[in-house]
Length: 316
Image 1: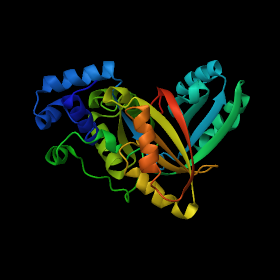
Image 2: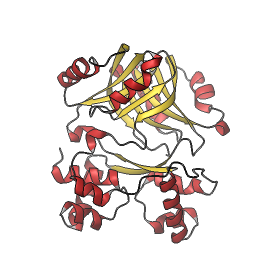
Image 3: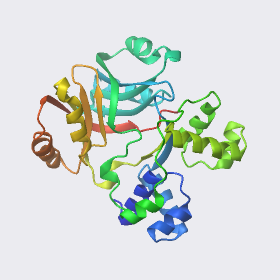
Image 4: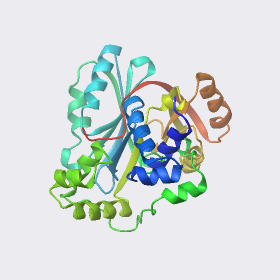
């Protein structure tokens, strides 16, 4: 389990993922050494990871949510294989270990290789459904509300960076590929290391990072094992909502601290979310009291998540 300083550090990284330890320590009221020590401990023991990721529109990517059903042993092996691919993220084992849920990032240049070629040729899969992500309400650049409640308003203001200008140019160029690959491995990689990886000068790297982040083409995410934060029960929620009320329901769910991910999709269900609660009883209460109170949800399927095999970064 983590303490108040650990939680504050995670919140700080969500606000400014590349902030120096010294600046974070100043805002939190602890030493630079304490911040560094806590960061390294959380990285070793809680899977803490900061990653820099491209906005899907800027990268010319489509995002799909893939549901695969297989026998337990085949499902575990397939989940591992999917996790090793550079075009996947958020690979989860669900439904007693017989279902895999994964996000797939595809582009016209790859011809939807995984969806159209690799998956159909894989033995052991008994069912497949692919849901095109149409709109993110929570997830991606939008931070999970349940993880950003540790700092005061003044502390948040001291760390918060300028909001992206999403009306400005957001295109990625060919030279950004090496930069984004490096940031997908470590979003806090130093300018010197990024310079070595890209072949650019440190000044060029710094300028390009600023351009990409301020245009919204690049955002940072913070991975950490939710169990250490006290969230021991996870489930995917597949909801059917009347189309006229889809946006209203999506926005209402986006206000729930229990949901780190909410998106509108295609498919038999048109809204999907992930719930994180501190116990099965808490999940039951959440579904009954909060989700059940929202009008125009025609049906809901709840599938428990057993394990997250791969988290945010789509780069291997």
